[in-house]
Length: 172
Image (cartoon, rainbow, N blue to C red):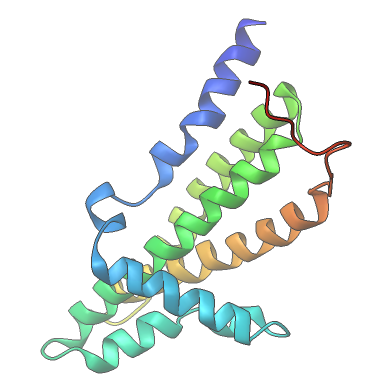
């Protein structure tokens, strides 16, 4: 019982552990990025993965100065939006699960986060000097976005479509 309680708390804390900084989430740039990504996903119904990197690419093109620094910051900026979607999909997926299944989902997600961190760190280390940080950030962006799309698809398949048995009543 204690293990289930700890697992449930871990699942509820996932958004806090994995979400982007609160200051970044409320910024006007992130709000504009959310709108841009939603429009891309709406327009690209047949090929959702084509939207991955769209924000970062336009951000790097618009940046002046060091392209390597822009590559890193733009990838992180887009990753913030995808990570929000990932956390929402995780929460939606967890709603239909019992406590044990939510615990396993949380453990799986934490293991996935660790794997992606290691995978992308290795990828970044294989790049030319000076480009490593930006390429690692781009790798993490792709992985987070791909996982978000995967979980959103699964959450939509699991979501029951229920209608109320009777209309709501106002009691006075």
